[in-house]
Length: 493
Ligand code: GLY
Image 1 (tube, rainbow, N blue to C red):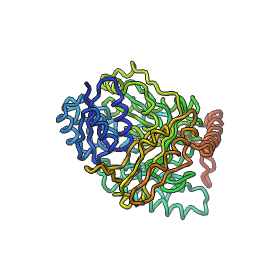
Image 2: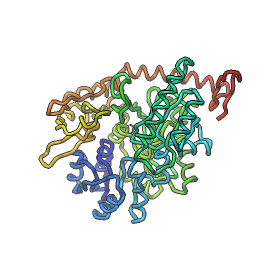
Image 3: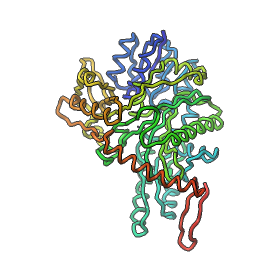
């Protein structure tokens, strides 16, 4: 028997729990959760484990629970417990952890650290950036340089606070400067307000464009084993409009690639992630053990480029790949712990997958309104339609009612021969999810559709043509700027 403690309560953790419970090693699942996710709760019960409700972000609580249940190892789903040193505290007690220690997790926690690391180790995909420790210096910079930029909190702030501003027309520069200045202030006063664990406050990066995709991988610090590529869709509403969410749904093609990412681009993406894992060990002296993911973009200046790092699986991206993982999850975890991941062959069902999130009205901007509604999901009907339900921000009550927690409610997984086929299957399940008090829910019907896929392929082809041209001219990693009175200059990166 193998006892595993899972930390976290979202749909990603439900998918991790399910993968662990499929193991042939007689798993007994325990969980630390802030809300009682009904899916994880049921898997704990079925395997004879237990749930400890409490602060899953508090390393002390996780260590106490791991000791109480005498677990063999802990699997940390989300990033925040890693940033707070959960893996480090577990190690002090001799309990292995699937999840990076605080040092390597800084790749995700500090976007400034990640960019500095990429420059120091000359890793491809280096974007030009400046990190600021105070808002005044950031504003002075914004006033001095009229550029297209991405303004970001210097720390991972739950995926919030990023604004990308194109500053292309000279006659709009003063308006754009105003927007940038106000957003820099908002980052300082709102998004970074609660974080004192890094000195940098604001990150200003060059703006890049292109199709985004997520490369998720297991690593033991020596070997990096990638999972199939996934593309998440961040905007709340159809055709990529509306506020950014944690992700409204995601797609993955048959095999390891996406229809708009080539094998060469996939290989380059894997190489970038491997380089970063090696570099972070050199920098911190700590081996990276657990999950490493690159939120990638195919850009005109570099081809595959890292936009952000995750020290965890993506959510919903994890829900595309874990249900089709054929390799035993406990074997993978033990190989990570023993640094023998090179001996593992990852196998997946050869299918395309689509995940769609159903969210309560109010998400993502008015979460208080989205909270406290009773949820109905016809899990049997979803199963009958060939799909699966993964519970997200939901809280199972003692009377059996499921109450919304304010974020995404459920993620529905479907598979098929093609992405549109999987998408159609998931669409058929959406009417079986509703809130019993009549509060509205929404989802994106376009995710995985032929139309959206075509749009992604077109965008990728355009960007690819430019970076191939730049490669032929020896311009990869170089920026050409035109500056009044100075003329054209080439900036080497
Ligand atoms: N889907 C984006 C994330 O996991 O942060």
